[in-house]
Length: 174
Image 1 (tube, rainbow, N blue to C red):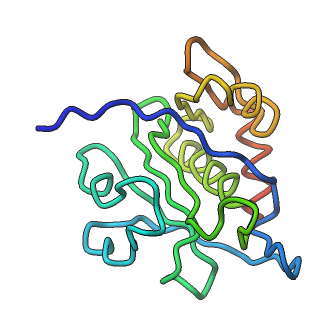
Image 2 (tube, rainbow, N blue to C red):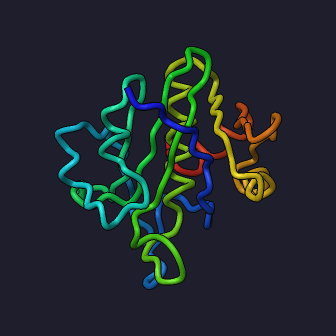
């Protein structure tokens, strides 16, 4: 079995929106998050992604989720790989689609939406919203400011219940 190196989270949280926002029109689109299974990997165009998501989908103990615009499930806006640690959720990998990166991106809010989903999943499993991840050192302050995450030690960061609630309430209306 291959030894998987730890990938540090290095995605920019561009904007906390109420869903995802089209940067040209300003329109806000409702989103949905679905688990991505190996049979769905044909929806992943390798050219649109930095990471090898087909491999993530196959890893034992991990679940991969796709963010899509409601009523448009074939165009993936972003992906996230998570695992259940029995007392919190761990975020292994997160990425926006190529067309949602850089100065010419189409939608903002994709990373925040995916992180909020991970926090919601943590609440649903009875873990009070706790989410952990390892961040690139240069982004620790960014995650503290945008996601209200706590720097634990080294590269480890934690989103605790108050911060998780802020994110969930922003993206998931009751």
